[in-house]
Length: 333
Ligand SMILES: [Zn+2]
Ligand SMILES: [Zn+2]
Image (cartoon, rainbow, N blue to C red; front, side, top):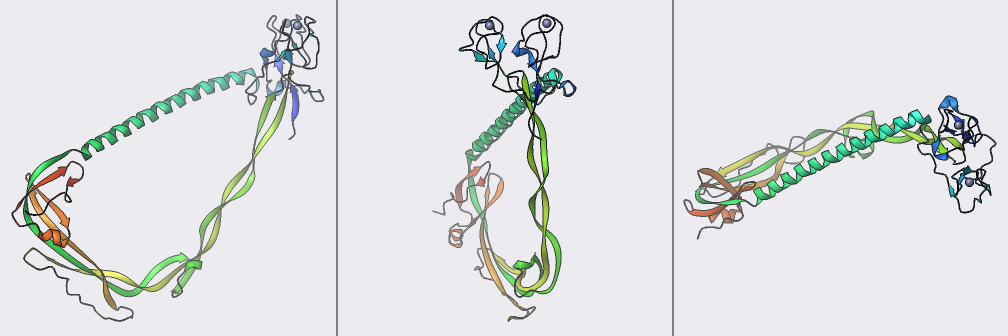
């Protein structure tokens, strides 16, 4: 829709005449009072009067001497005859989206409500930030609040674990364009892979703008709307032979037994379905402590683990948050 021009309305301040036309009635037809441009308002939909063909020459100017609104091209005031040189434009009525004064008031109420809600949101945000700051402070205090404890070495444990892998068929799913070349038993299905944005008409709203000369323009402002469309592709379900971790074997002991890897029994070796091989290895060396009436433990390298003599005493730091400071524990003197 192209731009349309309508008359603004105004109410006479001196008599009870209402809904006077902004362009046509420069003076009140009932009492002759000049139009006060600050009393102009947008009409309701049924009170709209077209001002098509009206030549626009800019917002009205206010006479410096008598404050009468004059057309921008007027040289001498229609109210007092004084020169219009150096006069200022009338203030424009805002809130063009609203229809008439009733709605304008409503809009103002909405604005106040909005402001109140925004203030509420700000308050809640402040409270939230306050709580977060307190929580951080508590964590920082806890982090740096350590107490000393007397520890005695209560025991040693070691654990060595070997993973066992089996060459076997595993069921996998992938987009067919990224399926491995050795896949077999393939089945495919159409699935949603992504979404794309496609145009879906437009959202329009009517915008009214005060032109300042007793008329206003009305125009539909439209923005394109989009919707998400699924994009389909083929997904493949297939079998593929891979080395897969199936179990592990673990050996454990204390200081008395030398740490050793567990004997690994493989069903069948080679590269066949059901063949097995050794996978990754893990080792863990744990020292058990007793201190402050509590059992504690630390994991060390094998060398450091050996350096703690059974029954020896140690000073340790216990943090409220992170527990016993294992790295800070010195070996036996
Ligand atoms: Zn009047
Ligand atoms: Zn004047």
